[in-house]
Length: 88
Image (cartoon, rainbow, N blue to C red; front, side):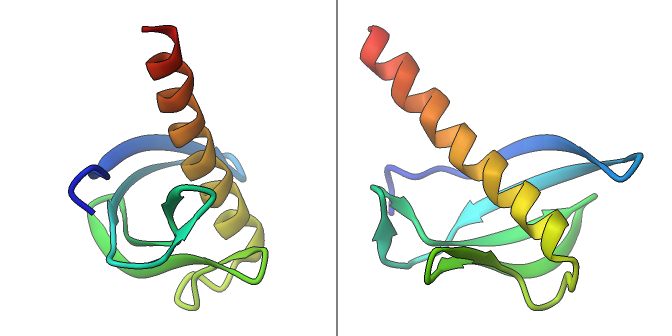
């Protein structure tokens, strides 16, 4: 897991902005990225967000559209890293 570092992004959802911090958790890889993360929103620990059976899940949030939006940004984060590494 040492090659996967914590990262931060801001997400706009339902007319609100959320500051998201994610820490990769010890988990199986899915498409070469961790399948689970410790999620903090606006500096508050939310729990684990994970990718299972083709779907992002976070039991504590209870809003699947927000969970999906965060999951999309996780995937975009790694895709942008992959693109910048291939350009070097």
